[in-house]
Length: 306
Image 1 (cartoon, rainbow, N blue to C red):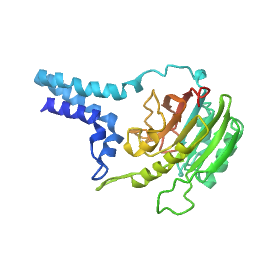
Image 2 (cartoon, helix red, strand yellow):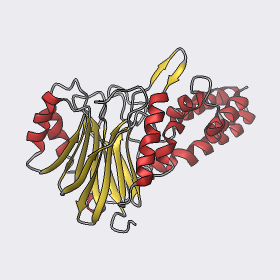
Image 3 (cartoon, rainbow, N blue to C red):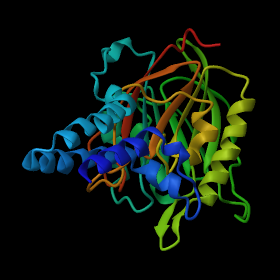
Image 4 (cartoon, rainbow, N blue to C red):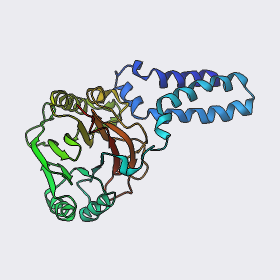
């Protein structure tokens, strides 16, 4: 049975796309926590050693190999110093119940990024973010509850409509702008996709998936390159619900950066993706007054973009 459990774990890791998404979006649920599946190897190893089961120990090689193939690269060092990046970006859902927006803004600025993307901005807190970030980030754009602060000029800023069906006007959680970086113009998207919920019927993610599809269409139509996507996407890069995005954009090559929830992060749902550029490394920053951890990423290859 230990050997069978090891083989089953390896199969789920290697062939998670084969797990059907119905009922209850079972496949997406598995993919949300896919890296944690590797923990099954720990009790299997202990029991195999206690039972002196050679078969189980041999079978254990399969899930270890599958996990290493999928996620081992994320554990490798960043491989570049900060000054080697074309851009350093920060992504943070600041929470609409954050009681210290000024302190949050100062904490994010301490990472010295070129761009800071924020979600769940509220009118009372917006002034604090603008005032605190203004000295180092003279350019910014806000549409609805999402915003971008930049060291470099912005142009062509517009609202991005990623509303799922049935959600009325005023649900504004996306923007698109062009950043005039030292390496050339770069289109930057900031988005906050609808939340997902786990319940008796499984994972409720249809609104998130629909919004991801609309965002994917906008990215596909983007003519400026390179492109950077920053946002709380309410999904991991392994979740097939984000396939409209991950099929068009590259994700971080190094770093796990589990960002949610702050008390015990189990998944990275705050994402940095790129097209015609590389997200070389992603990491979390210290906690703020939000239920999300901020993430910072180094971007390379912008000067070589299309």
